[in-house]
Length: 387
Image 1: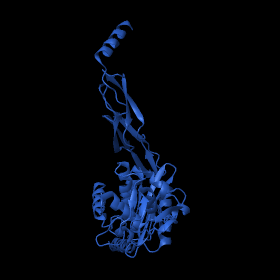
Image 2: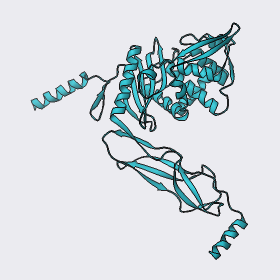
Image 3: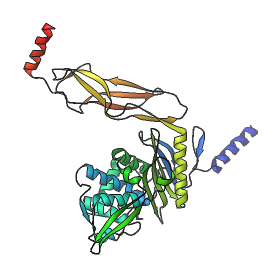
Image 4: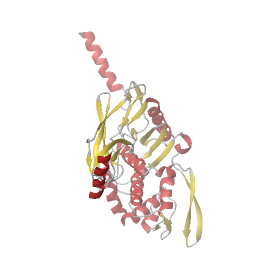
């Protein structure tokens, strides 16, 4: 009994001596030199590594991921266009920090300001766009927080559009991964700017036109194979932060680090996380969104069948070496009645992996099927008699 007691005591001591930020999956340990970190697989949204992932910390310019999301949404919703002209306010011009040195009343297109935000992390450009979209930075910040809540970012509060240190301005590694996924999934075109190493804009002021160079703050664009983005950040309180995205084969990962001690460590640790994810995990995917998986007979329709397509991609992350297969069960009616509209839900596809359901997607009509007129139906009956 004494011997057993000693073994238990030694085990308890070792539990306290082990570093709290060592995380193991499948027997593999990973420790990151930063206050918080997380790795997410993009298609599924699954977190495959978490080191203090829900710790609230200042995110610095990583904040701009939400700003970028709202910019791209405003364009997609046609509330603004890429060619719209934005006039810089005194407030935006006086942001300080990382900037492109906009002057009060200087005019730039939405596209060039967005380019400056994504590539060069320009605070003045971010605030100028925020004011253009919402009328004021304060109103835009309200929109940022509303969007964050809608995404389930439970540990996030924004106080400005650019990420300068402010009381009550915080988020987490996990929440950053969530908003990064939303931006990359909905607006993959952001990677055009996010992977551009160098570019320019033209300052147009009373003194004339002057070219201004932009250099990407994300060194992984040059250093890491497969990089697709996304956003760096650093302030006195936040230290050095990064949300990085990369693709290898058919898998996309998002790696987030907060409060790294220096810029070199920030990039080194992020590359280590991405290497860890790509080396040890794979993604198993169901039917792609838009793939037709069933044809259903239509009663009284101008077409005899309707094609049902998958609405949402369902995927699952598993460790490499696991050869289990994704199975799918399709549930659809035997027949449908016209009329049918494009996008109308007519069934679902349910996926299971290793005996457990991992997700389901609606099956929707690919193309509308109008109801046939009386004479058309009568003609079919007549032809049927003779056939």
